[in-house]
Length: 313
Image (cartoon, rainbow, N blue to C red; front, side, top):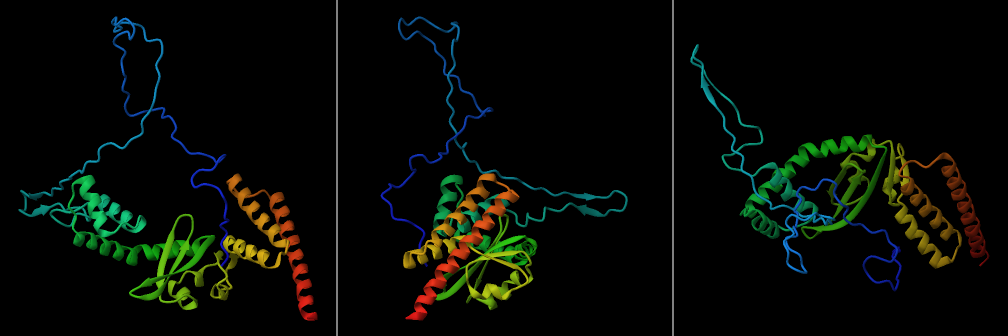
């Protein structure tokens, strides 16, 4: 597969003219610290009661000291004076043990280990350094197992249902090694939900096992893996990144001019969509469709010429 990355002489980091990102002044700071002028820097006279003629401000954005909170849950037992029955209140469902970590700690563990890919040992170090918590690897493992059970029993079903009803799904598959064997990580995603599923191979067996595409009726965006096109009850759109790589490879190998024109119209459509942050107006869509069709026809003509030339040989 041809890479889209071009070799340039530009240095790493921000490039000249790029849109920068910086902090903006807060109109409602949490704290205001006034640094007073007490004496004249020239003659030493007290300025305690002098008029302030100007105030300059600078703001510092920082994180306050992080402190662990301990919440004690208490239940009651009361005895009815009429019948003598003892009635007790119950602890919240998530409070299962005499001493335990709360949902925020568990959520942070999962975020660090699965999103930031921080190993067990370094996760332990983080909680020790920032919260003075000595979480054992066994406890981290139990949190992982609990989270995995939730994903399997609850989230996986919910994610499937949401994806099946979505107008557009992006599909991809990536090879990885697990227990010294090649496995395939299948990713199904929208702007709001992502489902990842590991299967021993890719193809229709995996797609049927995941059980989303067989029931999906929207637009499936993916690469050119033939297995996707088996499912005809939905529309198919080939990923533009793959198309751009293929167009680049064709141009470098054949010097066909239509490939550059197609690259430009695909990138222009993407930029216009992002610039307007909404659906393109009908006139723009019509122009792009006409241009797209004209470029395809040019490609057909150029390849017909090549085919005739090869036939003559």
